[in-house]
Length: 142
Length: 247
Image (cartoon, rainbow over all chains, first blue to last red; front, side):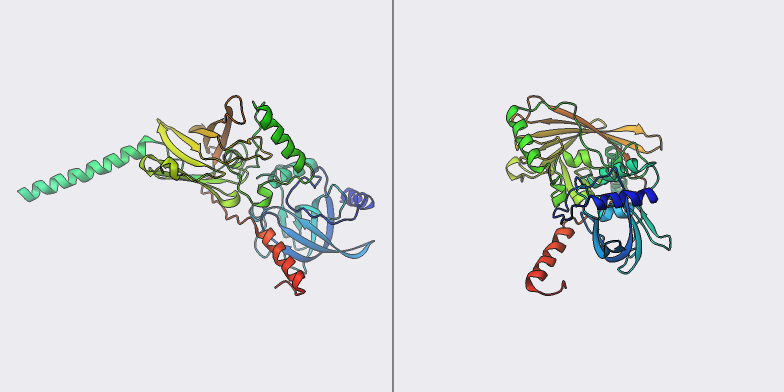
């Protein structure tokens, strides 16, 4: 987890803050890497073609909101998500493929809550790169 | 006596009809079921068509390169904007999201989970006259059986360029040959499709591709309403312009 955190910090230090207008492609994410965030869910929607989630983070930058996207509802269900699993106000830890341009947030690989609730890629993949490749293929599946 | 004769005749007739039905059903394999990519447990990952070398005509190559240059920065794709994949991509790409086949003697219906894209393959008299066939991204498909092989011919496609290496003009026609191909290591039936796309506008020779699916026991195809994200954006934009909270 420390390495993930250091990757995240490195990504932040390179951060070119800007808005990401396009939500319709996986090319903007680096699936060979993962960053981890823990925050409070402000907004969550399992929608197609991409899930959306906004987390409120408290870190060296202060309190701020970070946006994520992720799989289609269909692939979310196949990755263990079920209706009502994520609610506004929940504390959640998210592993995500980071934006290539350094923007905070990313494409959700997996998510878990303190009570053990979890969804995301699991099983066949052995490494961050393999996991990312599996998710990238699904993200670009159609 | 005459009545007994009529009963015997009508029973014999029913037996004949039933036997004919059984023979018909036994004539062809039944592809009804839910299918995903062969070669992976459960629901397989996505695959893309990757033909070795496409025999593209120079004009077609130039159009594809211009398209790719335009899209390379954003990675936008038809699917990302909720447009159905279209043939042959719908057939080649299915499995990442599964597909369901519903087989009747006069029509086979294929439902691809992604975008809930649907193809209808008509047999014999169920076919529409050529003039009544509506062009579209999946074209119009007509089927026939050659022994245990289902042959599907697709025409009335529309001009389509995308990232899938299966771009084509509206002159393209596609022939698919579906057959059962044994079982995989998990004991699941395998369905194989050999596809040939011919397009005198885009290609100098027919393009051949093969796709394999494995049956998902008791599988279900999930609903897929794609444009939810865009609709949500639209509501947020209207609310912002009106200076009101999102309803």
